[in-house]
Length: 110
Image (tube, rainbow, N blue to C red; front, side, top):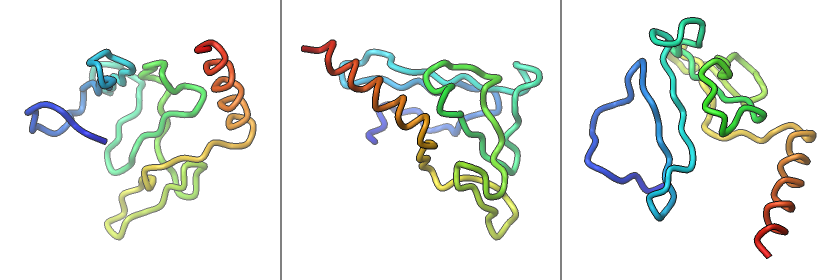
């Protein structure tokens, strides 16, 4: 994925990730921060995952921490950190819903 801009700082504990399409339109946003949003997850030594049903909702309370052998394929590093390999294949029910939604979107573009 191409990253644009000259921003060289890492993401902070309370931050936001914005995704834009090729035309510069904001298409998705992920806001996070356990300091600002009390009760949301803190990703210290663990990664966070967005459940399939929460994708695109920018729900700071919808993320879950990675756990060994979870549905995201998370595992422990040699240093003890727990995270996923960066990809996720949804369970069959969610995958079927995604396929149905894609069909509806494609029909609407005709």
